[in-house]
Length: 269
Image (cartoon, rainbow, N blue to C red; front, side):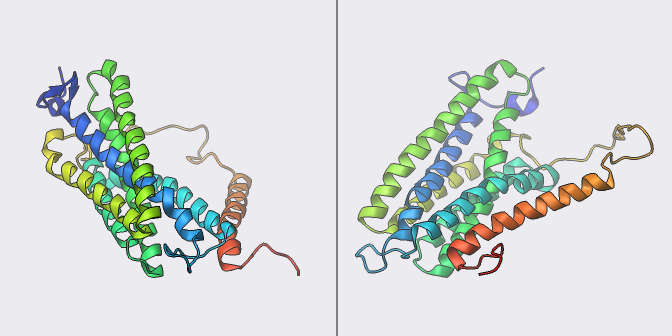
């Protein structure tokens, strides 16, 4: 029997109409993300004395921030997925992520340092909430029709590529010709359209992506050899802690040394 959540959906070209809602939401999200990213480094390194003035950073400083920004965008998918699974559900997480992205890109259009860092922070959080959960919703549309899932993801990722292409072209053009704030602002405008159409189309998805409901049935407990639930020894835990600490220090030191001139790993003069 077909899933009740998908039975009520009309089909377009053999796929539920919900797929195309997710298609356009993801397309405009990728438009805003890649469009902003295309001009980010250019804005950072552009001289403050030019007609289209930037922040006047060095290449090293700009690339350090760019690297941190792109890393955090993908790392935030972990807490974003966890929040959806435990508390909000995918549908609300996608919506809240879209709102954060609209706010972040809009604030970036204000050419002030506080707005710059605030906007980047909101975009990082927004992508973390939206990106992993919208992909999960695509899969949930086909729980009872696995044969169409591959073609559905192909269509979905066509939206990713289309959004990235258009964003780089249009935001890049406006940013370099009219001003950086126009490029950042255009990314926010199209993200607003994507968020808006998802908001008004939420009912299409039925129970798909709703807040998870706890099952009253007793969970099956896993059995381990011996009397330990955690198989790691104290030495294993120590090695994991030391490795993670060294990795975090190295990651944090890179932007600090390139942007702030503070090298916490430097020994001696």
